[in-house]
Image (cartoon, rainbow, N blue to C red; front, side, top):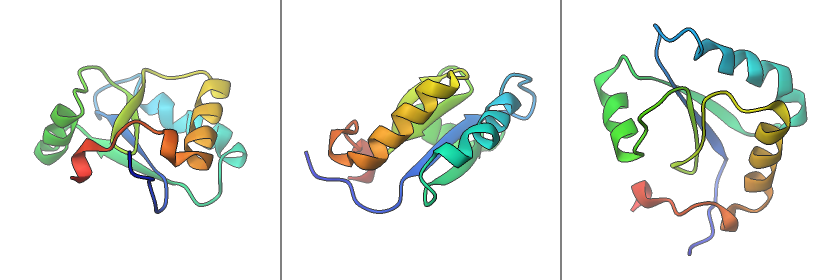
Length: 104
């Protein structure tokens, strides 16, 4: 497996009409001080057609969903500790992240 390089992008899949989905952004605001300062959190609104195509490639069937290096790590809203631990671990050890099939 190739070592991952570059900035870690946390991809958050949601819909405007999903009441639970907006809670995930509150969660990131709450824990951002405990995350690496140079990660990027990118929002993917499933109301857009091109985002639905990305979600299909990642096999996302439920939302909210969180992907790191194009692999889904969480579906639903994770506990604060689980979210912090996973993002920090993948940030520090990108070679242990799931394979990035979409970048090929």
